[in-house]
Image 1 (cartoon, rainbow, N blue to C red):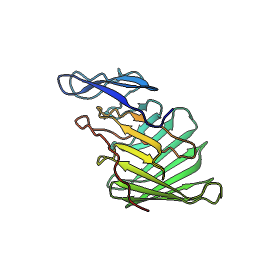
Image 2: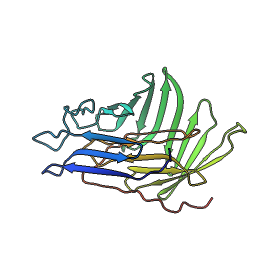
Image 3: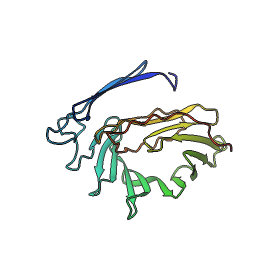
Length: 224
């Protein structure tokens, strides 16, 4: 299957401009989501099957990703992967609500960690060497250092929208590694991820704004 293919998405809204259905159609991927809106507000209700919401309107389950647990201030606390119930990702925030660290545990043992600094992400894996991600404007230049000579240094480019809701990651040959799309829903993001071997997947659910539609277009990445 080609990493890139044309697709069509059809959105349906109610009279209050709330998204009620989303249909995605491509050659190799067809899916549809329906959202039930509360009659007295613009929030999604618990009638959306397994895509339930808490009292603050935060999504509790994301298809193909897992279960989500939220802090009192609507920041993501814990993510339990659907296909790996013994794997959990925790997020830590500063006093301003900015995420400063995420930790992935397997059977209650830390496996990897990512620290978020201004313009710099530091990822540490228990089985691999530390990797750094340097943010340059809307582009992200990622260099990974590994001890294994069979895995030389790799350069990845990430093209991200200004709302950080869509991300396209490419290798140094402009081949797609990850496509991360959060669609505009009422606290109901849809995350589509495609990966290739040797590519770490770090998918985070992002709460989208229902009144915003973002299209991420590839641009020229900075020279290295």
